[in-house]
Length: 155
Ligand code: CUA
Image 1 (cartoon, rainbow, N blue to C red):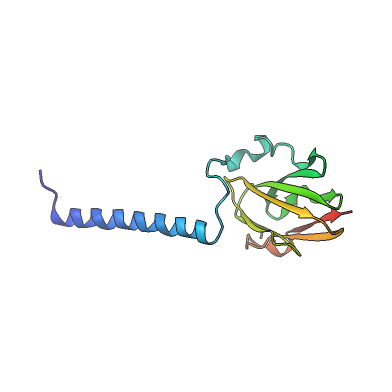
Image 2 (image 1 turned 45 degrees about the vertical axis):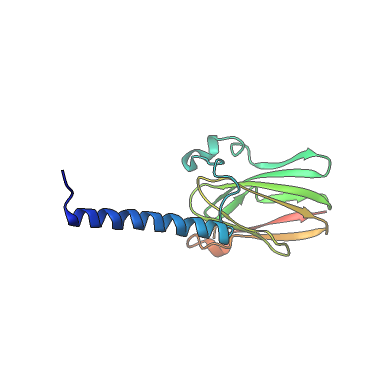
């Protein structure tokens, strides 16, 4: 059985489009540093509240001078929304989104990441200088996007 010529052409085109979109996505993830650190660290965005560690968001000391902040992002807030750590702490933020793509930017630092539903994003930052650091969503996520911010207090 032979394929019709037109079918062959469409098959080639559709495979080509598929490969192209994979290449583009891969390139964006690589070049723009938008990809989560591990593709295996996925999560069902519908079940964030029931999935560890996000069933218990908060600030946890993991060892001397080290903290983990388990955080969910949702329209239009960060949970927990009050974070306090001692100066000099190394803080790892373990984050996911409960709905749409949000941004996680800490003013005055190099921290700037995307937090996507279905993915776990981990970012580590050491806070040497005491002060109030503003955390902003820098991805447009809807009507309340401008309001989406919180602070981390370093004492
Ligand atoms: Cu969340 Cu903008």
